[in-house]
Image (tube, rainbow, N blue to C red):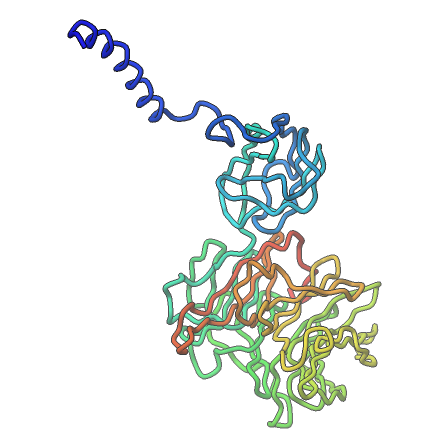
Length: 413
C-alpha cells in the first residue's frame, strides 16, 4: 500500500477507535435496567405518585403502600428498591404495591423496576428507622450486666445491675449509679410508687424501697414466714402493692403496710395489672410443672382478689419447657410476654390470637424483663449470647423496640 493510502486509512480508523474507548468509559446518562437494547418485550416505565406512610417507616416492619402506574400484578416481576436493597413485596397491582422495606436505617431513595420496562421509575426520597436497636450498654461493655428494668415518667430507665447496683439511664444513654451495690441491690422486679419512691423485690420475704432521687435501700415490709420468696410486685389503681413468687399465696400490701394473703398454690413468674371492660385484673404467668399458663384474677372495689381464670395457654401454643419472665400491656389491650423462646417476645391480642414480635429482627436470645418507655417504645433486657464454646459473644443488654403503639396506664406513680 502506498504511504498516502496508509495515512488516509489511519486518519479514518484512529478517531473511530478513540470514540469506542471513551464510550466504554463514560457513565450511563439514563437509569436503565439494560446494558444495551432490551432483548424482550418492553413496557411503560413505572411511575411513583404517592407513598404511605409518606415520610418514614420502620425498617423491616411497616407495610408501605406505593401508588402510581405501570406496575405489574405479578409480585415476582416487580422490584422495589430502597437504596440498593430490595424490599419484600406483599401485594401488587398495576397501580399499587405493598412492600416491607429492608432492615436498613436512614435516608433512602425508593425506585421501582419491572421486567418489561427498560428504565427504573422516578425516585421517591424516604426515611427508614430501626424498629429494634441495642440501647445500653455499649456493645463492647462486657462487665455492665443489666437485669430487671423499670422506666419513670421522664423516660429514664432504672436497671438492676449485678456489677454496679441500681443504675439510672437517661434517654440519651447516660448512666449514673442510683443506688450503690450492696447486699440487696440485685432486684428481680421493680415498680415506682407514690412520690417517686421505687419499690423492689429479689426473691426473699421482703419488699424494699429506694427513696426518690436515689440512695440506700431499706426494707419496707417483711412478710412471714421467712421461707417466702417474693420475686414479683405490682401496683393496682387503689395504691395496693401485690406481691407473689414461689409461694402458696399472693399477698396484698396496702399503703399503710397492712397485708392480706390470698391462697394461690402456683409459682408466679410475672405479674401485671390491666383494666379491661371496667374491671381491674391481676394477670400472672403461672408455672405448673413444665406448663405455663397466663391467668387473671379480678380485683373488686374493696381491693380483694377474686377467682383465678385461665386467660392464655402459653405452653399449649408454644410448647413445653419454655418460661415467661415478664408481662406487659399496650394501651389497646395487646399483651406482650418476655420469654425464652428462640424468638423471645410473644404478643397476645385481646381475642387470644398470638404471634412472635419481629421474629426476623430480634436476636435469638431470651427476653428477661419488659418496660414501656415514652411514646411507642418498649424496652426489654436481652440475655447475653454465647458462642458454640460457651464464650461470651454478645453482652447482655437493654434493647429499644418501636412497637408502633403506646403502653397501657401504669398505676404506681
